[in-house]
Picture 1 (cartoon, helix red, strand yellow):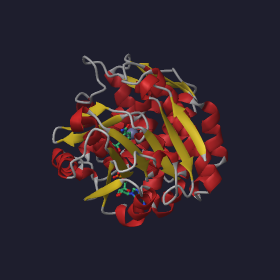
Picture 2: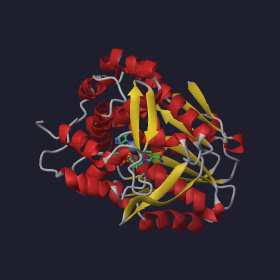
Picture 3: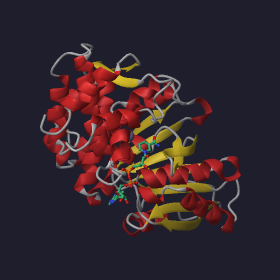
Length: 361
Ligand SMILES: NC(=O)c1ccc[n+]([C@@H]2O[C@H](COP(=O)([O-])OP(=O)(O)OC[C@H]3O[C@@H](n4cnc5c(N)ncnc54)[C@H](O)[C@@H]3O)[C@@H](O)[C@H]2O)c1
Ligand SMILES: [Zn+2]
């Protein structure tokens, strides 16, 4: 079992990474005897892992709520179902919400815990790679609005995060690759050594070799935890974690969130952002190619679809949350492991990077 401490004064917590956690005893399952636990999961993950989790919580008054699966259910309606359930089981302030699933369940269950009685405990049990390396740590919770992804939400740190690597056995390949995009992201902006490690261990990563996956998750979270400890509410450095994301969000919006998984859009977005860094002369040439090689070996897409109009991407980016007062605030890279926040790219340079990233160019 590996542990990482997320250092946030009285909101500090531990992330546990290991195998065979679900179904066994673990300190994070020790909630006060007789107190209420609500497991929130979805129709895909619950049949696989809910029974083991419930067995680990024996001694508590355990309830469950199983929601439909998918991003389209990360809405006000399904958040309120969680609240309704908490009311129905008469959860009091010492109740704990256990979120068992990917980032959708974690974000929405986390926000229910943040808002019910002004905040109750919650334990994240992420089961997708993306949620294990990214979404479950850092305390961002919320749900989508028709006019914006994650538009409603709050910062609410979990009481602990439990990552049972065994759950990855059932994760579809495409979802696994999408999670790898966020791994590449954190390495690219913050940890050159980790980026080289990923290149060296690419085959073992793809075959989901336990030791390698465990090390990869640990290194991703250690990086994220350091960023979050420094800037919990994203007033500065935490924005580095948005590398590739402004382009990704535009791509997701223009394709109605149907064509790409989030991580896939992020992979393409990182290619555009690293090309832009090169075009601006801020980054050694060859970095985008290097990133592309690694992501191709992780079965990630690298190019924007040909039928997309670059002007539409630029237009859509204006609506992005990360754009402040007209100038595009983007995360660029100086070199491997050295991301930075930049607001001085002009429209023509951004358009050139987009053009160079269109499929077939
Ligand atoms: N809070 C944050 O800091 C943060 C960061 C990144 C992403 N997010 C959010 O996370 C969400 C994306 O997360 P995601 O990629 O996990 O999506 P997801 O929750 O939809 O999970 C992806 C798919 O995999 C399935 N799944 C999960 N674990 C499985 C398992 N072990 N076996 C089989 N199937 C499994 C899910 O049911 C779903 O169908 C988005 O809503 C995004 O906004 C939040
Ligand atoms: Zn992301």
